Image 1 (spheres, rainbow, N blue to C red):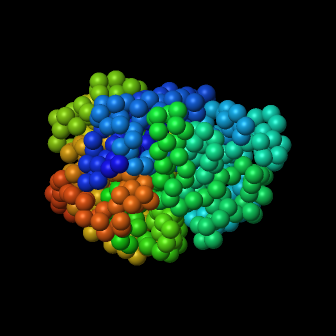
Image 2 (cartoon, rainbow, N blue to C red):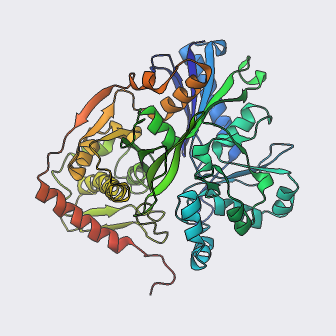
Length: 499
């Protein structure tokens, strides 16, 4: 039993990866599922499609790797965070589609809470800014809009979960209703100082505590899978939100180490150690991981749109046929020629937290081509990351030496070179870029003794390529000033209170 099955449930697809004891990928499968857009700015998923796609991916990964389920020591789960599901405790049937982390439907409720000053309580207790991004107001919306939901929740008839909790429930046949501290800390309901659900926040949002899962360590044996799923019961032994799992998979175990995951969005996490750094400057304090010896904290900057901007070039504008083409197209020009794309398609996350910002392109001239737009899209990703890194350094007093990169878009050499140029710091790509799934595998492997300690995991980390800055400092700063001007033109665009 020397393999770990990692279930990596993401925003647009469910993936399954098999890792051996050396941390190498031995099997892989992926299943996409529908994105549902009921209204502008609203995003939903069908929870049953999430579950079906994850099951199929897991079985295919085992089958194609020719590894028997009996050879799997444990399952680790990592997931899209903040996405909110409510389901019936007796039947397991969801009462509504999942409300996805990207969804902005609760922005008006956030505005109401902010006007009464409750955002200060949220920030102090949870380390989070008050925003529609997080699960708390999504739960409130479901309780308000699904007939009878709040009364049923008070009677203990309903369960809440982020996607990890939903998968654990389904894998165990409804025997385990649990999450880990990294996911709990993204709900806007969890006090990261006391490591408990916050009663005052629950009362203010009118969310019954009977809905909530038990919070267990990220590396722990939660239970076993139903025998019918894989033919044998397999321990579920690891759980972490996708970005915290990536931090763990990148072996960023020491305070001051940081990673950025380039996916649908961008998520920068900076390890701050055994105590939370005070949130501020538009970045969040969050729990990085919960181990048996205690929790570890991080600062996080959440960028809503990164790889999704490349998908927009493909699906929305038809400028490219596949996401991989963006690098070749962007290389066709030496610069973006003064064009800036601000991809605020669902507002701006860190460090701006502007729910009413909207996507903007500025600097277009008659000579602008699709290649300039492609390059401006890659630069926009890099500029957003610099915004977050600068805010983190201001909040923590830590100066970052290098940035570890992972995620699907980290395979784009031009993007990582632009990132190093924009930051003025090296960007390092590991040999294994599937660090989100790898982190979940490591957490599960630690719980069942496949690995003994984090030092053993750190020794397995390998660099594949290092990107060093090439732009002169004056060029870097001039281009960044242009970016900041472009952001100001995108901000507050859809604010109904702005004339």
